Structures are given as C-alpha cells and as structure tokens.
Image: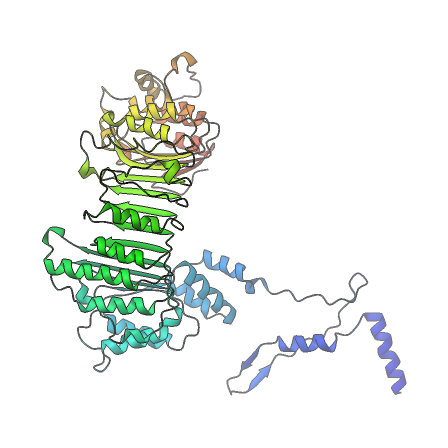
Length: 578
C-alpha cells in the first residue's frame, strides 16, 4: 500500500506541477501577520498551500508582488490628494504600521513644524503626554514664539523648567530646526541647565528678537551662548536682533546687543555654511567672526545703517573667497573707494537699501556670477539716485539673470541702456517700470531675452484719461495710440489686418526668443492694457509658452483665445486656463 501511495504522489507531482519547496513555505510562514487576540493569545494566519503551476516550462518561483497600497510612492500619492489637515494624517497613521511610517515621513517632509506660544504650559503638557511613547515623531521643526512665558504653573507642581526639560528630553532626537521668536525677550525662557542637552542633530537655528522695552535680559546672552555650545553641527544660522524704534535705543540696549554679536562671533559652529545677520554689529564682531575660520556658502548681512570700516568688510569677504556662493548686502555702508575682493565662486549677488554699489569689475572680481538682484529703497529716491549705478563695473559675460526692482521713471531710462551694456548674455530680466517709454526701449535693446517679468507702478493709472488713452497698448504693439483706441472699439479683431508700414515702433513682437512672460501691476484693473495688446502683440509671439497676467481689463473671450495658444495663469484667479 505504501508503495502505491508513493507512486500516486509522484504521478501527481509530475502531472500537476510541483509542491512549494520547504524553504519557500518557511518564508511564507514568516511573512504572515502575528497578532494578539482579545484574550491575549497569539494567533497566526495559516498559509494557503496551493500547488504552483509550471510557467513557460520553467520551475522558477515567481516573486510575491506587494499590494499597491503598501508601496511607498503610491500611498504618498493618496496622501497628496487627501486633506492637509492634521486629522487626515492621524487617520492614515492608524491604518497599519506601514501607513504610519509613510504618513509620518510625508508630513515631516512637507510640514513637520510645531509652534509653542500662548498657554505654553497647558499645550506643552498635553503634547508631552502624547509624544512621550512615540517612536516616530511627526515634527522636526520646533518654534517657540512670544507668549510662552510662565504666568502660572500648570497643575501646581508642573513648573516651566520641568516642562521644558521634559519637552527637550522627548524631542531632541528628532529636532533639526529650532526657531525662537519674540517681541519681548523677557518672554524667552530657557531651562537653566540647557548645556546638558545634545543638539548635534540640529542643523538650523533661527533667533529673532524685536525689543520694545528696556528690559532686555542680560541672562539671554548666556542662554544663547549655551544654545550655540551644544549645537555642534549647525549648517544654517539666522540671527535677527532689532529695536522697534532705533531712535529710542538706550545705551544699555546697544551694549547688550553688541554682547549678542560677540557671543555669535565666538560661539558659532565652524560647520555653519549659511549665515544671516540682522543686528547691531561693529568692526570687532566682524573681526572675531573672521577668526572662526568659517567656510560660508551663503552670507546675508543687514548693517542697519551702521558705519563700519571698509577694510574690515573687505578682509572678511576675502577670507570667504574660496567657498562663498551667495552674498546679500542690506543697508551696506559702502564708501567711495571700497572694492570687492575676488570671489571666484560667487554666483548670486544682491544689493539692497542705499543706491550704492561698491567699485569692482565683474570679470575680475566675480567671474562666475550668474544672478544679480538690485533693490533700492524709495526713501532714498531723488533726481540722481541711479546716477552712479552700474557705471564702473564693466561687462559680465556670465550673468544671465537680473532683477532690477527699482522704479524706472522717465528720467531714469539710461539705466536700461546700462543693463544691456553690462550684461550682454542676459536671459531673464525683472523690472519695475513707471512709464510706457521704458517698454519701447526694453523691446528695442533686449531682443535676446527668454524670460521677462514687468511690474507697473502707480503712474500707469493716469493712462486711462482721454489724452493718454491707448499709450500702454501702443507701447506693447508698436502702433499709434489713436489707432489702438479705434481698434479697441471694434468687436472683432480677426478680420483686421495692420499694414507693416504702420508697425515701425519697437514692440513686444521683437522679443523673438521670449518663452516666459509675466505682467503685473498695482491695481492692475485700473491700467489700460486691453484686448489690443493680446491680439496684436501676445498672440503674434511664436515662442511664447508661459504667460502670467494680472487682472488687467481684458475680456473673458480674449483670455480664452489666449489660453488656447499658451499656458495662461491669472493673478489672482484659477491656476490655469488652457
């Protein structure tokens, strides 16, 4: 009998395929979910031992494909289409362990920020109760804002230091970004033993204080020193210490603020790559900062109208010449004769505040510069405020992106000629215009542009009057203003042909390489940019693919036609019309 059963088994294997191997069965058993029943006993789902058929004459085991809803990028797509509210994340985290991990990672990457402010004790106590047993926290960015000062201990015995210590004990392993922001520094409370923590995981620290009163605590200087001592792997530091009214600063406030600068210059981690300083600093602070031998990639300094030695600034910039890539000067104390040292790796330069630029030659000092941004404040505007801008810098063959965010009036048209001369390889330009004449010069001289952003100022409101009507359309289309007025009165432009002899003036059609265009203006609905510009200007541009328009008085029908030719976005309004 036993021999007959053995033969039957062998015959069955040969005729129907083969049994799953012992190794494969063990693997299947290990992959089953083990769960705890209500009584506390362990139960295991039994695998279904079906015979595997031969596939194409081979005996190789086909790999088990995971269910699509257990694939990371699929679940992330589902999360993207769900609500951004915290409730949705909680629901996803409760589905299973896999979804918990994916939802947590997605939320931490996209948002991951929690702010502690008013009623600090009560809210933080609840946060601690929930997160103390969490193995994968949702947050890696922690902000402490004004108002979390202790007014009354929560539950009597739960004082501020204890709450802060518990919070840091639980959250330190997950902290990557720390932000402190307060209008009144007396609200900023650190635990007295802050140096006992290890913040080596923190890569970004933001420390913002706006002083309203004369009660800036000196102990805050020591707290900041302790915070920098334990943050040994910082990559980004943002320090902002300003007064609400600089004219009311007392001598004590100035001394304490300078102490902050000294602490930052002596305690900042040598691993810092991105530094932003907006505070009262002097030559001593810059000298100490140079002594830290930092290798900065990005530097932003707001000098707050403080006069400094040009030699100190030049020396510090020279010490960063091997690594510095982005440089921003705000209210810089540029003086006559100041020169930029050679910064061979600098790709972005921004000058903001006073209409002054240090003397340098682009090709010598900044040979790899790609982008330039210039923003002069209107409070410095006078008759000759742009007279000395871009005069001595020479040409730059590397710059392809320029943002000149200053109002260009009728008397300032020469600045467009200077931009064209200084940057012959320019591809992208952003300008703020106050006259249609500037449009004509721009269209005439910058035919090589591929990306253009135009912002209209308040002067364009006046072109709705009868004596100036049509001049905005005329500047875009290169047509006489009176002809633009007559064309606007027509209902149908499709049958209207304009002779080439009438299109003698520069127009937007001359920008033959333009691919992206953005036009906006303050109170754009009052600026007479109409259907004429669309039909005889924008629709004639062959390479234009992306167009962003403000709420100009353009008809809906005209916008629909335009949306069929380019990817159109309205500001404000629906994302696209296409």
